[in-house]
Length: 220
Image 1 (cartoon, rainbow, N blue to C red):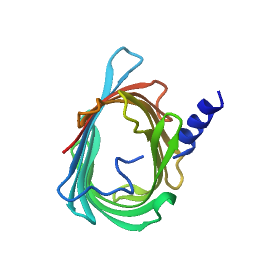
Image 2 (image 1 turned 90 degrees about the vertical axis):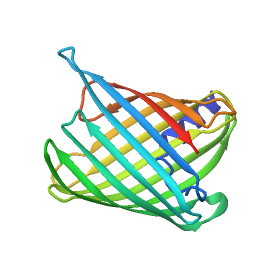
Image 3 (image 1 turned 45 degrees about the vertical axis):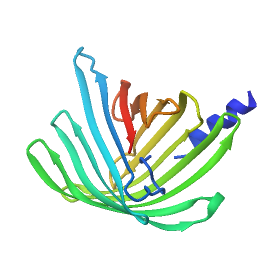
Image 4 (image 1 turned 180 degrees about the vertical axis):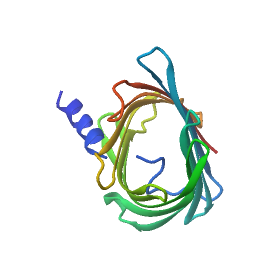
């Protein structure tokens, strides 16, 4: 029971991103595509889709693309570059990320800028190795406001078929209430495969229902 409590504490106290403080090796790549569906009270379905990709341009430079679309109503597209800042071995590492792109509402679009400081650390549990990423970001949506974000991703990466994963996202801007999103999930991956399926749930402070997440991750 104590070990279960310890694992949940590590996963929940941690507070997401895909790789955060870690950079891709030169010429290595990672992609993630997902769909999240919600069932509205009238029986119809609401959904959003996302596509994320990153590539190791050099050993000290990772570049990538982040796209999200909510039923053609609103969304964003962002290009980013990540560089290392410091590596403290077992105590963790830091990286910085700069991004620029656009966000839209219906047919209107505006510039989007983002700067992120990420901390990443590996840890060990009785169920295998795990990892933790904490991202602190400022996101300037030029037609709206500057958002202060604090996100956390934590999970296990043991050599088995199923591993747990949790993502927590928060965002705040002046004169608005705190936005939060929680995604508990499981990663399904065989030992020899570079592909993982992610199945989970999504709950946000802006909705009263719970969404279902289906994603596929690939490493190249």
